[in-house]
Image (tube, rainbow, N blue to C red; front, side, top):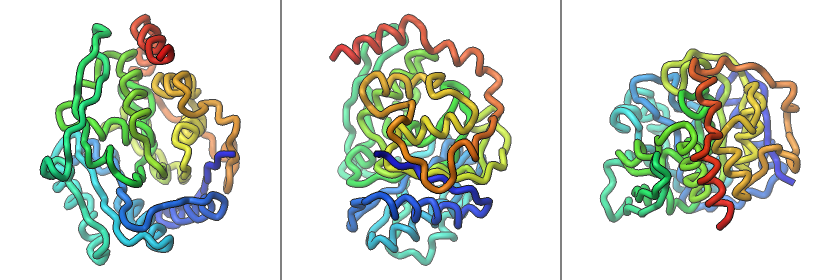
Length: 309
């Protein structure tokens, strides 16, 4: 049995603490004490609504401390702007200033020794293979936690815990190479997510984003937090709760076909709130109809290659 905790609560800190407490009252967590890496979402350092709130990370840090974790790194490589600016502008330094065991890490500023480049093959628009390089700091993290808001997206419909990690592990400009059209980007994200997923994910929907996300959307006061160790099932359940079908999300469907998780969350127990009690409708991105065309000939061919291996 897999477990997803759901808490309906407007107070962000309380909601996350409660969601993790409920989850770990049911699930044996096996979180290492020496180092846990928390990966927030700083897609664009100019827009706080698009990014992980520092209080969400504080709640996770406090939970980890209660579990005996002695060393935490909050690490990110912003897609637009400097990570150090996000840490300053969003209030991370102030919120976590008394936490001596928490290190704030701008991944793009790490040395090659600290963050070795790892080659990884994905696809180009013409279905040929290209090699990109991954952030070894994240790929090699002994225990990785994803914390971020649920958002609609301008290319893949929704962005949740899987994509928060999958699009973080490509190093710097390599992130742009993942974008190869509606079909192939979903395949590439699935391949990256198969390579590295969070060990624990918290999706903070106290305030979410709908419309023209993942940056320019509008706030949606949802008041719901989700947490799980089973990331494909988690994202599939949240997709459903946002008013979309998991089968609409190309990278979720690809992972399922590749044998990674179950997008129908058939072997899942929801603890806390029932998922249908928090189900709502998110306004999609204005190009939603175009994005639904991901199941094209390129996608079908490449998924066939991957599932035949």
